[in-house]
Amino acid sequence: MTHRLLARRALLIGAGLLAAFPAAAQVAPAPAPQPAPKPVAKPPVRVALETPQGRIVIELAVAQAPLTTANFLRYVDRKLYDKATFFRASRAPGAVEYGLIQGGLQNVGALPPVAHEPTTQTGLKHLDGTVSIARTAPGTATSDFFICIGDAPYLDANPAAPGDNLGFAAFGQVVEGMDVVKKILALPTPGVAINPVMKGQILDPPVPITSARRVALPPVAAPTA
Image (tube, rainbow, N blue to C red):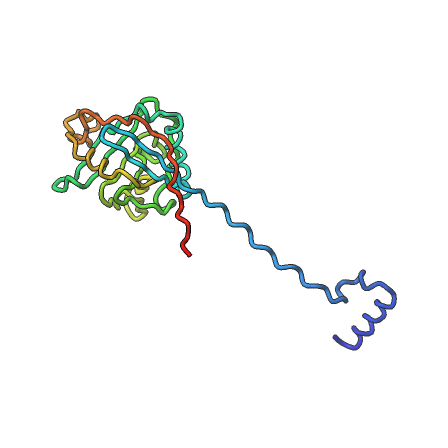
């Protein structure tokens, strides 16, 4: 601080005016800004599908795919899936233990469609046991969903691919009952396919979904000392 500034400071103190000139005073440093609170992570939700073949429990990725999981839960909470079926079993040629099974209402009594959430947005992948929503064009998905048996990366969004490269919207994972999924995949498929792409993949008879209900998450184990 220069001699002139020291003299000015002494004059201001003597006149009782230092508070009116904060630039000449030793101002206390401003408090450090507090970090913004982290958003509360949404816990996953589990849904149990009961079928004559057994029980399938799905854990929904609520945080990663909020739109698609909310759409699925609309059908669950309104008990609309109680009238649904698994109607399709698509097996890979030469590898019958690999493929997918598809279930839903087949647009009978379906609710309005949901916006598309590609895997490039959610970070999810189509892996063994992944649950994903069926669609035609992006933004047309309603009630129908499918479960992967084996990894299926070709169902992920691929921005480098030509045409409609948005893939399918994965939204959950089977955490119990993959043996049931595989039993359904192995059932006979002599049914008539309305869509020629599904020829030889329609279950007859289809497998009823007798109920679809939310179930509690397993308790978190206490940390050991």
